[in-house]
Amino acid sequence: MSFPWARQYEPKNGLTKFLDEKLPLPRLVYNAVGAGYPVPRNLSYFWNFGVLAGFFLVVQIVTGVVLAMHYAANAQVAFATTEHIMRDVNWGWLMRYAHANGASFFFIVVYLHIFRGLFYSSYKAPREMIWLLGVVIFLLMMATAFMGYVLPWGQMSFWGAKVITGLFGAIPLVGEPIQVWLLGGFAPDNAALNRFFSLHFLLPFVIAGVVILHIWALHIPGSSNPTGVEIKSESDTVPFHPYYTAKDGFGLGIALLLYFALVFFMPNALGHPDNYIEANPLSTPAHIVPEWYFWPFYAILRAFTVDFLIVPAKLMGVIAMFASILLWFFLPWLDKSPVRSGHYRPLFRKFFWFGLIPAMAVLFVCGGAPAEEPFVILSQIATAYYFLHFLVILPIVSSVEKPEPLPYSITEAVLGSDKKVVKGENTSPAV
Image (cartoon, rainbow, N blue to C red):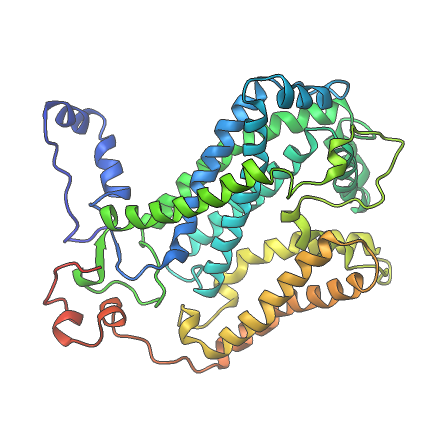
């Protein structure tokens, strides 16, 4: 994003001048997250979650590299090396708890980031590529988290791997060969553990690469904002630093307080007790359940209980589970409303807060509950509404609703309708 009023980087001494000429990294940082990057002046704390997601990705990479130094991807000793890390490695317990709970916090801030994007229609032009890359990041996160959950080789790790890879067996003709290819055999064992460990180590760096593309795509049109109104003048913006570095720093501080409270006082609250039992292929747990961040999609998978003509229920569940995420790729074209912000879309707002959010909440609860009534019927109702919302309700609402009047500019939304300020005649930044 280029604005004529953006502050320009000026090297201050010989070293910075040399770097600016040979390797302009300081200029890149200054233009990306410094005073040279103007951003809308009305961003709320809902715009903190991207920075928080980036922070927790770094936490996962750093702690994961340390854990990999002490872990052995062998079915005979994987569980023992996990206990070795917890009991014998200096600060190993902290690394493992930080890594396990860091994954949960990573998903928490990403889910909040996604819901903010859905409410404020961050997927609309000219920011389609930002949204599409974000969905790719989410899919990579899901794959990475699943393979990481297998590595401790506890009961839930083993049976989770067996159930999830068994989903591919539902695909006609090629399903079973794909399943055997994924596992390197007919059941989770050494080959599967080695493959999952290798990919679990590699994929975070792939995610980091896509995050760089995501940020790059963001800097082309610039940040969205709660009004959905594009920047019209200098008075609509403030420099990213120091205004939003301070705001992001405050949000990060709150997130770290919650994160450290979980790591130090409730480190196993989001885990499953069965995963502290070594994997036993001859003993099936009473209730196989994935990590909490997979629950809504697991509920969608289990919502299909009856075969439809020649299509097995299991196959329909697999298709629906993957489709529930893949349909996000089409949101920029499903939502036809010219207005972005949900604040100015009264009908959309009702369906979002009283339809989509409750449906997702029900899917979260049902995904972690046993596959019995009333959870099965609730998950079926919530799944039906989830797909109806995106494929039917959203296109219709975006075509028929009458939006509320938008402010002329970001400045008007913040400071009122002072004509001099709105037209940019008063350009002094205010916070």
